[in-house]
Image (cartoon, rainbow, N blue to C red; front, side, top):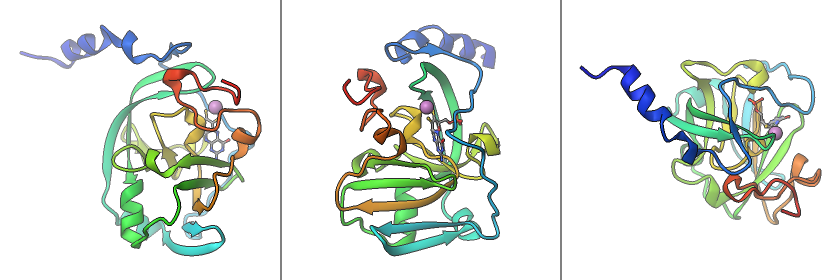
Length: 201
Ligand SMILES: Nc1nc2c(c(=O)[nH]1)N[C@H]1C(S)=C(S)[C@@H](COP(=O)(O)O)O[C@H]1N2
Ligand SMILES: [Mo]
């Protein structure tokens, strides 16, 4: 008989190859926010997709939850040097949000907005396919408020500051426009495997 414990141990062996340079494995799940946790009223919440200032489409909470739901399990790397393996997320893939709204992006630059005023910029190519989702569940439970609930981005292949919590907006921009931490000295792209931590890395 094959038990979960057997697979658990197998996954555990060799996990070192999944830890990027300069990172250490953690089993806890730290909270990192630049300010207080915003209170989000789901009766008023809208996810608005724009090209610069022009609104291309929007979803309310019921609309969003009616979209195709996807689960993925991914390792998450934070620039503060923790890596947490096998984080189980559920939500709507970035591509599925765009296709539900019938949006064809006119530029390759994207900024995400959080209800706390946070912004972070990413290339469109890093959001396509199964690389990124707007997640409403972590580990089978609603994402908690401190971790960005009721809805946050998850872009696991980049440092975690690229994953906006308390998601309210997606903006396609004509030029690449650095976000909150990118203006504050963090790297514009943030690849954990080449340690793109700070702007001069
Ligand atoms: N809206 C918003 N998103 C955010 C942040 C924030 O302050 N506001 N912090 C970022 C940073 S620096 C990190 S490391 C991760 C932390 O997510 P966690 O609190 O769930 O660990 O969220 C990112 N997304
Ligand atoms: Mo961070």
